[in-house]
Length: 272
Image (cartoon, rainbow, N blue to C red; front, side):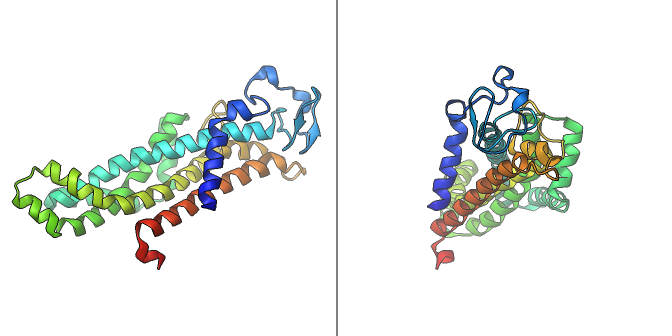
């Protein structure tokens, strides 16, 4: 419940960022360069308190974190949902069809999983370029194979059970058997894997943005905020990178805690 409460709080902060942020950190009319690199708790020239300090451009770090959190969560959730749909379809097709179809699908999955995810993402970003949509496309390409392998393993077990044989004896259509009977029984492990992969997608996007290959500066994420302050760490201005890093850490930890609890709820034997 602690992980769920923390994740809900972060999601609420991201959704309500325009309402609860002290300023819009990407509105030039609200930014004063004279307020750049102020330490946490400082008072700006316009009388505004910067509770987490400001960055090198005079942007309020608390507001920048709220806005960056919106992009990070959006990229992580959307890429996971799209990859889940593609991987689930591929895994169900491989398990139910069998034969050459299964061999072809699983060989593609094996080839992709043999390469590090960060390497595939870097190559795709280098080809596609920067942008939210392009980062999501790269993450979907990286993630779908995990779901395909997971759902194929579960579906192979479920395909041999009596209720599937009974459905075939009743001459039900393959589509109805797959979507009405097979898919619902494959969902519990997929939900857990998808929850974990949301955190993995957020971390991977942050890595790409930190390296300068993910999102452009006009579409900031937590990884890009961390990268903006990296050059100032040795000069003592730690807060520019430290607080976005803490926000990224809390986001990933809360999602992983929720995934652990979902695993116990959906499979009570593991909890015992």
